[in-house]
Each structure stands twice: as C-alpha cells, then as structure tokens.
Image (cartoon, rainbow, N blue to C red; front, side, top):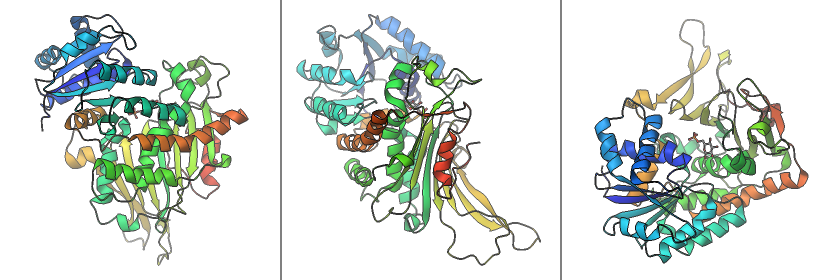
Length: 476
Ligand code: BG6
C-alpha cells in the first residue's frame, strides 16, 4: 500500500547508517511501489556537496547494500532524481533558508536525525525557530538515546521544547525486525500460548544476540558505551518487554508502550553475582578488543550476560537470561521460551526427549520453532524424541525477501504510526534500570573476563546458567 507523498530530510546523510540502512531501505520501498514518485529525500550534513555528488553517494550506497538481483538501472535513475542535498550548519545559520524553501508544506514532513545525540537539541530547536517544522512534522531520532538516565532526560526535554511526544519517533531497529513483530502475533493471535505464558509453565527465557563482528572502525563510540549500553538497554530490553508484557487491549502505540513500561518498572535490580562481563582477546579473526578500541587499558565489555528477575504475578519465579557479544562463534539472535517438564511422566523417559521450547529466531533464517516431544517412529517401544515444529518464514510463506527493519519503520513514520517506536518514558525507565549496574562496575573498577574470539563468551557466562541447573542453547 503506497504511503502519501512526503519529504524526508535526512540529517547525517553522508554517514554510515544512512549509507548502509536508511537510503537502501527507502530505495527498496521505492522499488516496491510504496515510496511514491512525488516523495523527496533531502540529504543534509556538514560537508559541502552538490546535488550531483550526493546522488553519487546514493548510487554507491545502493550498489554496495542492495542486492544486484533487485537493483534496476531505470529505477535507480528515478530514485536519484528524488534526491537532493543541502549543506547545513547545525549550530549556525548556514543552509537553513535553503532547507526552508526546499521542504513542501502540503506533504508529510519527516526530519530524520541520523547524527550524534549532541545534535538532537540544536537541530530540533533550529527546525522550530526557523519555522521549518510544523504541527504535522515528524521527527525520527536514532540511537543512542542518551548515555544514562540524566542525559536521556535532557534529550527528552530538548526535543519536547520543539516537538510533541506524538511527533517523535525514537528508533530501536530491533522492533522493525519481522520476527519481533511475529512474536506479538504468535502470542496474541493464537489461543495456544497465552494460558501457558507465565511462571507456572515457563521455566525460564533466554535472549541471545550474538555477533561475529568486532568493534573495529567504531571503537571510540563503542568504548564509551560497551555492550550494556549499546545492546542491552535498548534492543534486548525491548525483546524482553515484548515477551513479558501483559496483552495490551489493542495494538496501538500507547497501549502497547504502557504495557512495555510496566515490565521495565517491574524489573528487579541485578545483583553483582548475576552479571558477567567479557572482552574478546586477539584471535585468528582479528585483533583484541583493546586494539580495536585503540585503548590498551579499556575495561569496556564487548560481551555481557545477565540473569534478570521480574517482580510481578506473571513472572515472579521465571528468570530471564540475556546475553550479547561481539566476535562470538556465530551471528545469531534468538529468544528461547523454555517450558517446564510435564508434571508427571507416564513414560520411562528412555530416548532423548526434552521439555517444550518455543524458539523465536530473529536472524538468520527468521522463523519460529516449537520443540515438541513425540514417539520415535518404529517398533522399538515407547521411546520419546523431541522434534521441531518449524515455521521458518521463508519456507512457510514463500518469502524470498524479508524486509529490512528500516523499511518497515520508515514507512511507519510516514503513516504516522508510533507503535514500533520507543516513548520517552520507556527510554528513561530503561536507563533507570541499567544505570546502577554500570555505575557499580565503574565504582569497583570491574574487569571484564577475557574470552576467545569465535567462542560463546567467557566461561563464567555458562556458569550463570549452570549454577541454576540450566544451560544456554548451543550457538552452533
Ligand atoms: C546496533 C548496535 O544498534 O545494532 C551494533 O549499535 C550492533 O553494535 C547492531 O552490531 C546489531 O544490529 P543487527 O540488525 O545487525 O542485528
């Protein structure tokens, strides 16, 4: 379904995220006929580029990040015609008049801040003061949304000075991933799961976001953040919320976000014994974390695992184990909902059966799998085995292109749908929970455990579950 004509002003248009994700996603929506030919992409950044040199950047981005199978020379030329560029001085006057005369009043206007958070305040007040933004304009802001609770509060206040909350779209791109949305469909559009979705039937939940990449190239940002700020406070927290929240009364922005907020507010503080930090060593895949970060004394974690408790009726005795890290054995993001054993087994349990588990794979091979125990075929007696009921989307739906998270999210901005974006109070609550964990490390000078590249993180992370008689699902 095409969206109405729009102007999207992309601040940070010459940056990495614009090149890797935002521009290619717009192009794919253009190919799909969803981005109308009356739409405009106005790149804005500090560099002094002409429209033509910006179009060259756009072309390079498409060549590098859009599969040649779907690229089309004619469509690329048409797409480039929709692109223009204005050099902007975020804190001064340069470029603002030109921007004002470029954006059209009669179409949806979206201002996309793909820039560091230090520019959110100055850019948003310029847009308001120069009369470029109006009541119907939308503001899209990228992560990181602050560094801690205080800075997030300040950012929220800065944005609120120029925009209303219902105009602000805070991106957490994990929410745009197809399987994450499917998690909600599975939970709330089937009668099967909801009655079992609580501490009586669920033993524990695991969330793993493992990456094979290191931090080379973005070491200075990362070294200031670490895995806790870069991944847990936002992406893993969002996943946890969607699994743990109560059913909202409707799939609408505020009802959904109210329920997520209640989960974050019910999270227990995490004692030191329930957190493991790691840092990758040098290995065949590349240099050590400290070399990548160009900080030989860095105590920043490139891996973190935590056991998280939720103090409410639904989850009181069901722990959530979260882990994420760089330079791990395989790129895999998945959620495992591990059900309990049957209360009583009538079989002698010969064979290899395991309790039910619902595995939600975000990437790769997006899909949902339910581990079910059946009888092993054959005359060998009542031997049980556990097999996956596999709902891999590409197979089940015949999809060969699962849209990138950004495609969905940018189109949601144009439709004015905030459901998959974070609200200001949610982000603050997430920082309020994360801050004490990080502060404690800093006060104690806590050293991360070294781990080998290509591994599943430090040994201590395995122990976090072993000591509870549980284990992480294998990564390979
Ligand atoms: C980003 C983090 O938000 O998410 C990166 O800053 C991380 O460190 C990335 O690599 C992971 O996203 P995806 O979509 O590749 O899983």
